[in-house]
Amino acid sequence: MAVSGKHGSVKGGCSFGRAVNFSRKYHKGGLRVRNVATRLPETQVSPEKEGGNERKLAAWTSIRQERWEGELAVQGEIPLWLNGTYLRNGPGLWHIGDYNFRHLFDGYATLVRLHFQDGRLIAGHRQIQSEAYKAAIKNKKLCYREFSEVPKPDNFLSYVGELASLFSGASLTDNANTGVVRLGDGRVVCLTETIKGSIIIDPDTLETMGKFEYSDTLGGLIHSAHPIVTESEFWTLLPDLVKPGYLVVRMEPGSNERKVIGRVNCRGGPAPGWVHSFPVTEHYVVVPEMSLRYCAQNLLRAEPTPLYKFEWHPLSKAFMHVMCKASGKIVSSVYHLPYGYNFIYNNSVFFSNVTYFLKVASVEVPLYVTFHFINAYEEKDEDGRVTGIVADCCEHNADTTILDKLRLQNLRSFSGEDVLPDARVGRFTIPLDGSPYGKLEAALNPDEHGRGMDMCSINPDYLGKTYRYAYACGAQRPCNFPNTLTKLDLVEKKAKNWFDEGAVPSEPLFVARPGATEEDDGVVISMVSDKNGEGYALLLDGRTFEEIARGKFPYGLPYGLHGCWVPKK
Ligand SMILES: CC(=O)/C=C/C=C(C)/C=C/C1=C(C)CCCC1(C)C
Ligand SMILES: CC(/C=C/C=O)=C\C=C\C=O
Ligand SMILES: [Fe+2]
Image (cartoon, rainbow, N blue to C red; front, side, top):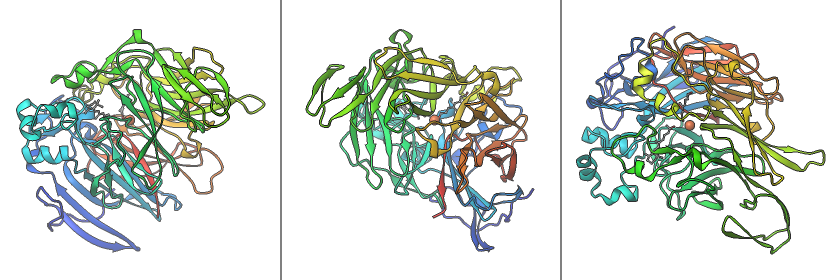
């Protein structure tokens, strides 16, 4: 299979780095394609030496050039209804010159784009021009604090200026390498866990447009990497490391102002639990309090600890808090609140300004470790009253070692030994009747998906509602990283797995067919790094989970984390 377009020698328009390959416009069947390739700046071209990976998986190798765009030849048939753009973000550049980063999450953000139009597929990638990336290129050294990397004092002190920057957050990265979301107003924002790492991009050109500036005065340095975003809602959590707790905030489409809907005080531990993600139901925001907690000392340390910026506090226990979206209130039982009723909970005084039933809860749950919640929904009795909440996540059997397994050296040195820790679909059941405990069980037998489980998506129409299907990465063992795509049927408790030996697929994203009435009527998009060091975009049928099309990239792309769908305008 060939990639259309030839490499020429016209200069591209990148602000730095030599534009070496080609920049060519052509018009084919009404679709304008701009073939562009730009090499990375010279400081970036030396390959990572760490790990000695025999298989040369592109997944764990830095992107080979700053940007590229071109049409992919397609094997199979892309459904004609699939019109729009799939965007995927992730850490794609893991070295500065010959200095190699340690951890998967440290890499500078690479955005990849698959544009589907009338059965054709145009692909492209481009580095996000964060301050952290630009400073590293300019100064040929790390200038900001990444997930595990910390600049040498002389680097960042000379770059940023003063020690106080450590406390003000000035030395924190804005490397938006985790996800990409399309807001209800159409703006597309790349995100990471630092608030300053919220960057607006153009989904057509992948150009960095500028910072997403929050116009409120909430301050803070970190937030959840995974806000909940729909056409009308944007929810996120702001952990409070000073007075351990979380602010639950909401932002309206068209606005840059987050409004505080409520606050949850932590029930255990010296600091809030890590909230990489959280789930919502139709009426509630679920705030997880994991015993893997942020650690202020580790935030300031120069050398990484086994749990990086976090600490495991099993004695502090784990909790799930449920907050009413409308009222922002958390209580431990069901109350009927008349207008003007004051009550005290968690050392705070609450005032009811409307008459309603509060059905919210804060329960202790078994210890767990998760990056990603999958979905949540409300359970009701025959009279339609909400009796409990079910929340599903990719759960790593309360084993924090998964974080260290994601070190690049581990990912690059697969020797055939099975080293991926077991994971499952962890299903929390949270009672809303005042009971103090919630349950955590596997939603299906983890052997169904090879006891690997992460990077999941659902049909977005089912967000917060009773649902049946989820799409994720599972495992065919032996492996050191999830290596299958798996369709989970949470009703039949079965999984259907897709596997390409030696390959690493990235998070499957479900796109519903317009007019579909069945939950799984649509396609699943993924990008795969194959064992030959190459890679391809993959389309699976949502129902059968069989391959319907693939398009080979001109060269293998690094692993990516999370994506979104931007429908045709
Ligand atoms: C890629 C991914 O899944 C997670 C990325 C997390 C990052 C980049 C976290 C960064 C952080 C800092 C740079 C300092 C403050 C703490 C913390 C949020 C861990
Ligand atoms: C790659 C990953 C988490 C990414 C965070 O956004 C987790 C992989 C877990 C393996 O089982
Ligand atoms: Fe994530």
